[in-house]
Length: 416
Image 1 (cartoon, helix red, strand yellow):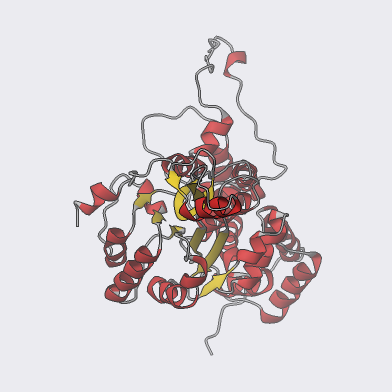
Image 2 (image 1 turned 180 degrees about the vertical axis):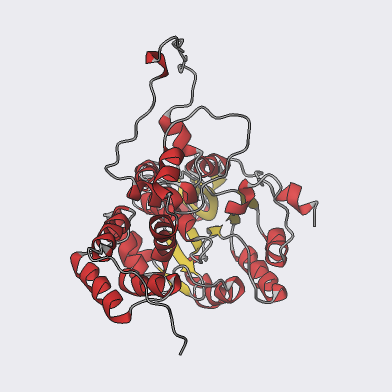
């Protein structure tokens, strides 16, 4: 065993107090941490000890993380709280309003804003008043044409939202609708102003009159609304986007008069999970909590081809029998055999009325279908759109009313 030099431990050490404050920051960032876990973490550190930062990290992670999706927030909060001695100065500069120059700023990483808000909870950030400086000129800014907070939130990436912004986004998603126009079915119904001749009804009417033909009966074709089938990727890179979309699907499935016959929802990562019955719960938080307990592969790996094979084999005939519209939410980054993925996408496309692919990677201007999984899936979708913010979901509702809408598919197909 290696021998370490003795450390100068202060008499009034505050490690337990700092662990308590770290737990409060985690709770403010959205990780459910109670007093029991704080006591367990303090005792675990006391028993296990640590000689390097990784030991301390894994000890706290074992006590505070209960689900895979919490690790991202934990990592960012741990890095800011323990690893950077000047984290508070950096976060105050990051969160405070400032006059920015022409240089390009670093974009916040996933969960960084939630961790920063948690660490700055209760900290008063002073903004210098340049107008009160001696000899300073007062600057008046006309903000009448600037983007409102709601419009700015619509264009903000789901993965870069803070806790408060995500809560506001969920309230906006609950108000969105996804209307769809009915299509004409083969079945008919009697109509006095119909355009089709109803021979059977005409003969029945003549038999009531002793075989005398007095009038002709007419009929029209019945309108029918399709089913909506959503397949949401909940792997590590897609979990935040799928959570937001599930809020949107919950609102669609519980909306009166939206037009959809039925709304079916499935999640997939390493396996396929049917969460349709959970979305019928009126309370959205209870619905998604139950769906999270049902799907055990949140923030896991990605096996798109295998999960689509399970859907085509076990569920396609049950939920796709009436010309359903399929909403596929994934980044298309699959490590399995691309030929198998291509075959399953082709089968899915033949079973559906329309296949709409929402890919958050499309938000980048330089996006190209270079990944083998994306190249295998793209020819078998009818519409390819981004799904990284509220504005993209609003655009999806408008695009459904245009049958010839294909999004970015034509442009990307030219690159293959």
